[in-house]
Length: 264
Image (cartoon, rainbow, N blue to C red; front, side, top):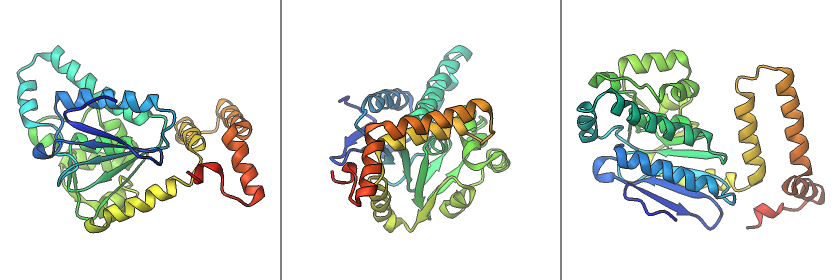
């Protein structure tokens, strides 16, 4: 297992992982080291076929303040090509998280500004505290939410993304839920309990079926029915039905017993 300076990667005995952003003294702001370590962490997680899902969390008061100011100051001194390389690394972080084969759930407390909205948007699901604060704050400091914008648009829609990217307004957990960025929000002191309910529910599901369903949802996207998509859906259900977990799930249902993955 890789040792990190800005992250913590923990494996739960029930078969899921928690990746913690771990720069609480800097409000979990991104810098070059964290970006590189996120790429390493996602690579490690992707190799673990035994994992059922991933939780993305942060130590301390805030989920993430976005880009580290000292790192931004250093970037401002770089030429175009060096900045392009930085942007490519951050874009790869977002793509790697979005494309992870296992389900992902972000858990948000405190502030989530700038690039932090990218991480949240790249996860399959997110929950947060009612008093959490969100902002696409880039225009306030003369830049733009470039590499995260495709994922934010997918999460909250084009019209809302345009508004918040242009205004840099702050909005709370309730508004984030209304927009679709959060699936649910809770009082801050109930967030951990709610997370326990979410993990318990996810552990009821077939690990292989969840991975296959995530791949299916990526393929279906906006639901435009084409001959190729129809063939994909037909083949995907046929493969899962004859797979070991598919056979176990169907047999357990007919036998009125728990499937093997619920007995761990």
